[in-house]
Length: 483
Image (tube, rainbow, N blue to C red; front, side, top):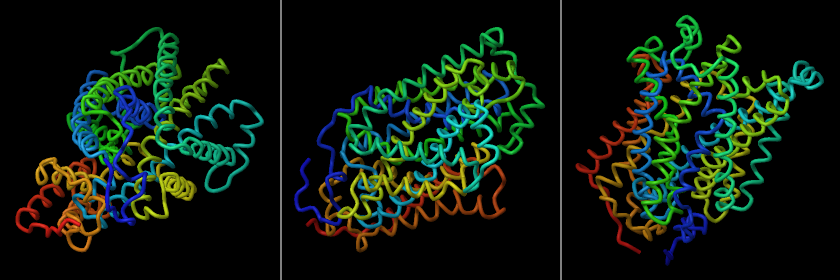
C-alpha cells in the first residue's frame, strides 16, 4: 500500500506498510524457535520445571500456557497481516498519532532490558567454555570491573558488538539469520539431552528431584505454593505466558511481512504450542538427567556443557547456545526498539539507528545487571509493564474498531487518529489505571497480596482493557476530519 500525503513527522520507509511479503510459515515458525531456543528460554523452562514437582505437572502447566500464548499471538498477528504496519504505527490507532510514542518507548525500554539479559546469557556460555583453560580461569578470578569479572565484561562487549553486524542489512538479513539460528539449537538441545540421559542410565520421567532440593531451589522464586501444588502450577502457566509479553505487542512487526493470515497461523501452530511443549519436554529431561549425573540442580545449559569431559562438545554447545541467544536478541530485542525509536523521530532515526540506540542502552545497563536473580521474578516484573498496553490495543482493534483500521490515517497528523491534539486521553488514562495494578502497587507497595505480582500482566490486560472500553462507551474520542 502506497501512502499519499503522509506527514513527514510520522513517516519513513521503515515505518511504511510492508510492500514485500515473503515471510512464509517457516519464517514465522522460526520467529518462535529464535525467541524460545535461547539460554534464557531454557533457564526459564528449567526453573519452572522445579516448581511443578513432576514431569506430568510440568507438561500440563506448560501445555496450557502454550495454548494461551498461541491464541494471544494470533490476535496481534492477524492485525499485522491485515494492516501491514509495525507495532508503534498500529498503536497510533488507539493511542493517537503522538500518544503512540508512549507505548512505543515502553516497549523499547523493555527490549533494552531483555537485550542486556540475553547478551549476558550468551556471553556467559562463552565464559563457561573459556574458563576450562587455566589461564582464562585465573584471569576471570583475579580481574574485575563494571561489577563483573574482566572475562565476563570482555565477552559481553564482544557478543554485544557481534549483534550489530546482523542488523546492518535490515529485516531480510534478520529473516535469513533466524531461519537457521533457531533450528540449530534444537540439534544441540537433543545432543545435551541424549548425552546426559545415557550418562544417567536412561531417560527418567518418574525419578523426580527430591522435594527438599526443590524447596531450596525455589524459595526465592516469588511463586506462591510449594512445588507441585495447584497454586504453583497456575503460577508456572502464568509466568510462561508472561514471558512472551513483549512479543504480544510487536509480533505484528513480523506478521506484517507474511503473505496472508494462513501462513501466520501455520507458523504459529508449529512454533508455539507444538514447539514450546517439545522444547520444555527436552529441558525437563535434561534437568533431571543433569541432577542424577552431577548430583546438583543445573538450570543453565552452559553450566552443564562446562562439565563435559569432551572439549569439542563443550565448544559446540557454547557456540550453538550463544548463536541461538543472538537469534532471540535480534528477533525480540533489536527489531522492536528499532521501529519504536524510529517512530518517535522518523526523520532522524531509521531502523538501523533505532537498533543502535537499543544496543547502547543495554550496554549502559550492564554494570547494574537488573536481570540477575530469579528468572520467574524478572519475567513477571518486566512483563507486567506491557499488559495494560496490550489490553488497550486489543480492545480498541477488536471491540471498538471491529478490525477496521484506516491505514493511511495512521500517517496523517490531522487525520482520523488525531484525537486530542494527537493524543488519546482515553487510552492513556486506561493504560495508567492498568499499570497501577499490574506494576506500581505490587512492586512498590505492600497493599496487594504477595501472589498478585505473578499475575501482574493479566491484571494489567484486564483492568486497562475494561477501563478503555468503558471510557470509549461513555466518553467517545473526538475524531478529526480526514486530511
